[in-house]
Structures are given as structure tokens and as C-alpha cells.
Amino acid sequence: MKQMLFSVVAGLALSLGTSAAHAGSDAVVVEDAWARASIGTSRPGAAYMEIRNRGEEAVTLTGLATDLAEMPEIHRTSTDDQGVSSMAPAGDIAIAPEATVTLEPGGLHVMLMRLQRPMMEGESFSLTLVFSDGGEMKVEVPIRSISARGPED
Amino acid sequence: MRRRKFLGYAGAVTAAGGLTLLAGWWRVDGPGAPTPPGTRPLPLTKMEFKLTDHEGQTVGPETLIGKPTLAFFGFTFCPDVCPTTLSDISGWLDALGEDAERLNVVFITVDPERDTVEIMEDYVAYFHPAIRGWTGSADQIARAAEGFRATYERVPTDNGYTMNHTASVFLFDAAGDFVSTIDYHEPREFAVPKIRRAMKEETTEAT
Ligand SMILES: [Cu+2]
Image (cartoon, rainbow over the protein chains, first blue to last red):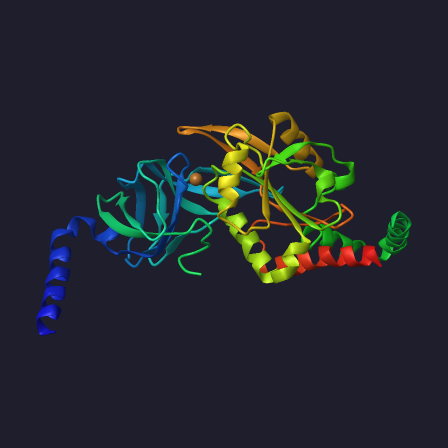
């Protein structure tokens, strides 16, 4: 137990020590990540999560990387007052201090275009979030069923 | 039925003077808002189109007469709104239990180029078994959308194309008359009572 505690403290110190340059994105926490299974690879996939900025400076999410899809992008679905839904790249996502950006069905989503393999229910994939300060964060995203509505039912 | 409706309108006109404010609220912010004038779907009996369901059977608006209907437009390459809507509908049908058998539920593609009968069959299998997938020629899809007053548009992307489309779920009673829409983002607890209302109109009709 004492040893475990020690290694946690050491890990924390290490991350603080090496990343003074990206203090902003180091304060980012990702919660409730999930994705929908795909049927084959011809259709784009979608993933969702909550991105929380626990720091005191704003951070900007500028890009995504994953070996699952050649073109991962943040998209925004919007529905107009006529009930027509459309989807477009959302561009950079700024997250104010203490703020949370929620990626959820019908709003912001990670759009996984040009899938390199099918997204199978029960598996997971890793997704790297890239921030404007150069910081990166790797998130393991569990894949749920095609008919899933959230991180858990 | 038609006469009763006419009396209803006459009554509304008489009351209109005193109720202008309320009516304004009803239309602008209230429950009347989702159906702006001129965009109300035609009764199913006034629509004309011929499509094919995911089992290869020829279907059209007449297929839906006799049971209340939930219908919506989408496409299987849609990563966000369409699987979410299909999951929502599956959830409502689960909540209705056995009563779900007294409904028609159809998902009409706006992307017939990619959504063949086989693809629709494959896709609907992932959702509630009551959901039928309809596809057909571009021309017949256009006629169907026109009847429902639904719109769709092909939008080129870096990765091919996507479709903008009406994401509301349309509700019709058993006689084929439009009842209401369930809009995307509408709280789930409103949806099931709306469906029950459409089903109740079926029973009123029958007695
Ligand atoms: Cu998208």
C-alpha cells in the first residue's frame, strides 16, 4: 500500500515536472467516453464524452488522432426550427476555466471517418485529444451497441 | 369525422377574439409551435408514393391505414441523429410493451443511392423489431417526403456526402390523419403520451 501510494505520488510529480509548458491542457479530465458500434467500415462512426477543464486557464481542443479512423473530427449536429438536422465540422473547441464541454447525441460528437476496422461492441479504442498548447491526452473509448443512447443505460 | 372537425374550427373562430393572446402563445412558444402553418403533413390517404420495405414488399401510404403510425426520415450512413432517433423510438416501443404491436413504425431513407433494400434490412435489425425500413427510387422518395412535408438535401463532404434532413418523428392516427410530431431533443416523457394519444384517436374512431 505504501509502495503504491509512493508510485502514484511519483507519477503525479513526474507529470507536473515535465509538462510545465502545457499546464492548461494538463488540467483536462475526460469522463463518460463511449462510442457506438459500427456495421462494417463503410459508414462513419461516432463517439461521445465529457471534457472537463479543471484548470484556471482556458484550453482549446484543436484536433484528434486515432488509428481507428483516418479522419477523426469534432462535428456539431444542429436542428433548426423546421426540425431539419445537419452536421458540420465544429472547428476548434474552446473550454473556459472550470467549464465542461459535453459531446452527446444530437450535438457535438467525435465523427470517425474512414474507419480502418469495424467498431465492435464490447471492445474499445484509444483516441488522442490534441490541444493548442501542445498537450495531448489519450482516452480509451469503450464501444457500446449500435442502439446505445449513452455511456450506460 | 369531417363534420366534427368543421364544428371544431367554427368554435375556435368564435372564441378567437377573446383568446388571441393565448393563441399567440400557443403558436409561438407553446405546443402548437412545431407545426408552422403550411408545413402540416398531408393525411396518408392524400399521399401517393410506392416504395419497398426491408423485406422486399411493395409499400405505400395505404399500407399504413388501419393502425396509428410513427414515421421518420433518415439514412443509414448517418452516424449521430439517425441511430439516436431509432434508439429513442425503440425505447418508446419498449415502454409501450405489447401495445407496440398496434402501431406501424417506418424509417424512410432519404439516401436511396446507398440505402438499398438489403442495407435497410441489415440496419433495422439492430433496433426494435417493429421498425420497418422503406427505400425506393429517388423520385418516389421525393414524393413521400413531399407528402410528409419533410425536407432533405445532399451535402458534399471531404469524405463523400452526407444528408441534411427533417429529423422529427411524424405521428398519424389509424385513419391516416396527421396528429403531431415528436421533435428531436423533445424530452422522452412527452413522447410516449403523444403516441398514446394517437392510439386513442384510433379507438375513438372505432366506436
Ligand atoms: Cu458528424
